[in-house]
Picture 1 (cartoon, rainbow, N blue to C red):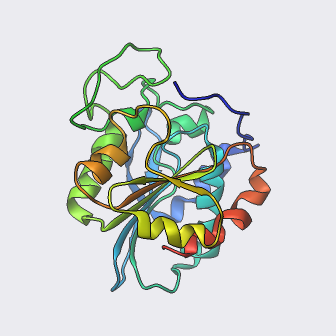
Picture 2 (picture 1 turned 90 degrees about the vertical axis):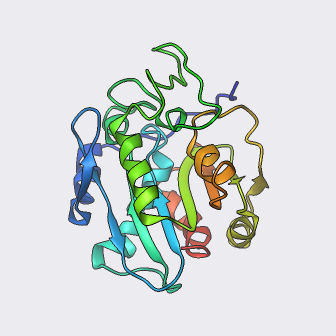
Length: 235
């Protein structure tokens, strides 16, 4: 079972934060009907999928995507590596707007991917995986993007103990990130994660994937400044 840490700081106006991403365009709708914003930015380098807000109450990841958006995406710019970037700042807007890990159906989206080890459990559980694998509209959208975009690297922002959780052949990316931010690199987050993106993409399909666990409880005003160098090392 995952160790409980201090709570993430909440945004004072989450609806305004979400609406700020609207210039990216709408990719789809959440289970609760909220827009999922995102955009594919053209480039000649590696195809990178950059995701935040899988768990809506892990606001550190959304503070990081907000900072990235304000610096780059809002001005239709990208970092200097020339990557082809698919940017989804908040995959789970239901959870973000309701300060919840889950979407409007009470599902943990990072347990809903159709992995070989997907496990059905009971509604109301913290890690409720849904009535079936890939049952949720957010998961279906993500699967479609994986099929169409075919990323060569995936970076997914969460918050817990500070670490770069490596899924699949992603150690080289993790080392680049650690050169800017001295977080632990590990393949083992410390508890099972059936139905997770890291398992689906990283371990089962060998797409280099990093679950970037930003320090839980870091003041939101400090998040982007803290993680910016690690992000720009790989994006």
